[in-house]
Structure formats: C-alpha cells, structure tokens
Length: 340
Image (cartoon, rainbow, N blue to C red; front, side):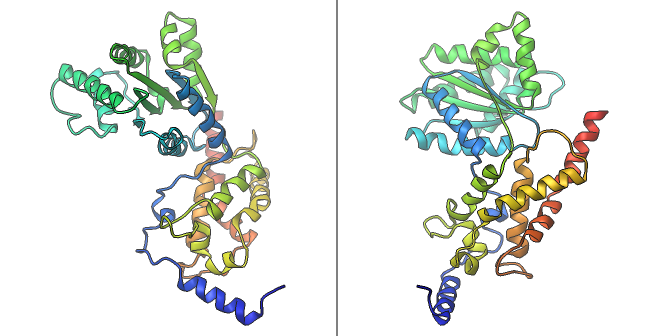
C-alpha cells in the first residue's frame, strides 16, 4: 500500500535534514580518494589472493593505457590485507622512465614509494643495505614473512632492473622472507616476457613473470551495472553514516528508489553510438578513467551541491557527462597515434 503524499513529503524532508554535513570539497567524489571494484578488478583480486596464498614470487598484469590499472592497484593494496586478516606490507611503486638504469636511482624510488624517511640519504652501498634491512624488518612483522610490491609502469624496467630485483630477492630469501613482485604495465610488458624467454634470462621469468593476467576495461552492460551499483549501495561516506555516494548527491531521488545502476543499458548504448558515430573501431572497452569521470560529472553537475541541481538525472545528462569525460577525443587520438 502506497504512502499518502504528505507522508512521503515528510520522509523526503527528513532524509534531507539527516544528510551528513561535511566540509565543501571533502567528499571522496571530490577528492577521488576511493576505490570501486569493477568485475575485472574482482576477478583479478581473486587471482592475486591465490598467488599470495601459494607464495608465487611474481606475476605480470598488463593491458592498454587508461583501463584502470592504477585504480586497480589502489584497490588491491587496500583489500588484500583485509582478505588475509593480517597487516601484510604492500606497496605501490611507480617506476621511473629513465633512459639509463641506475641502481642508486632505482633504490631511491623503492624507498621513497615505501615512505622511508631516509630514501635519499647516503651513498649507494648504504642505500642498498637500508633497503634490504627495511624489507627484512617488514617481513618479520607478519606471520607470512612476506612483502608485496606492485610495480606500476613496469614496461619501463629493463633487464638490469630485474637483475637488481633478483639480488634483493635472494638476500631476503636467506632470512626466510619472500619478496613478491607484481609487475603492472602496458601490453609491451607481455612482449618483454616473450623476449626474455628467447634469451638467457629465464631466471627473470621464473622469479617475477611465471603467472600473468591480461587486464580489461568495462566491456558489457553487466560490467557497467556492477560499477554503478557500488556507488548506489556499496559505498559510504562518512564511514558508518549509511550514506552511499548516490544517496548523498541525490537524497530525495534515492529515497524514492532511484539508482544509478538502472542506467547501465543507456550508458552502454551511449558509448556504442559515440563509437559508431566517430568511426572508432576495435573491441568495445570503456577505460575506467572515463567511466569514473562521467560519474563524477553526474554527481557534481546535477547533484545536491550543484547550483543547477536536479531531483534526478536522465539519459541526456549521461550523454553530456560522457562527452565531457573526453572519451571520444581520447579514443580518436589513440587511433591516430596507432596509425602513425
């Protein structure tokens, strides 16, 4: 039985009054400080947890640019310790695009990205000893005696970098600590594995490339729906408030049952039509970068805090948001660069 109109109105006012009062610009949508798992990230998460469980010492995770690999790393770094119910030390390392490999520079990058206070102090030998000691101590702090590094942009590493990593791995192995390295990068990373397999560098593959995962973007209506559902019901800010991201930005519409996930098919159709209109060929694959940006535009441009806020959104609003995400220009630019 439906509620009387007056009662519904009272409930909507109550929903609005109970809306969390937070400083302007501090919501995770504003700061981009959150992780939403796609179907692909959930699939990869299961694989990585299995690798960790089996003490696999390394694997490659590769895919074309902008699919959400860095976003994926943030999710894994946060959620792997929760899965194992232990504070396993995990770090996100961003490799340098150096023309010449220098061990001192490489160690400084590792220490800096692990938030070591003395990353730049001393000479090479002192820094190398500091790195090994730091990794050893981290290993002692968890029952698995394990340290995990996700090295981003790993296609930039060359053979010399891997030789150094093998040295560090061997030193840690002597003190019963396992250094697990997940190499994350573009498709060239998989090509490097093929090159190493043809040379005298099989030890690199056996240490760090024995397993692999080809990372994909959003490919289907179901993928889009899963992503949107996280904003609707599986996100929360402030923590413990019960206010999902969608509810925070559209409190009245959320109270009446509106959800972003209902637009999954519309969004798929919009991306498909834009690809056809602009002659974008190849596999349908939405980079996470553009999906997240389009959702952010929906919240900021039409949500509660906007000067042009709406009760709810429409398919035309999604079209505008997707165009503003620069998806089309990015795909056209990628095609031009590929044809050169």
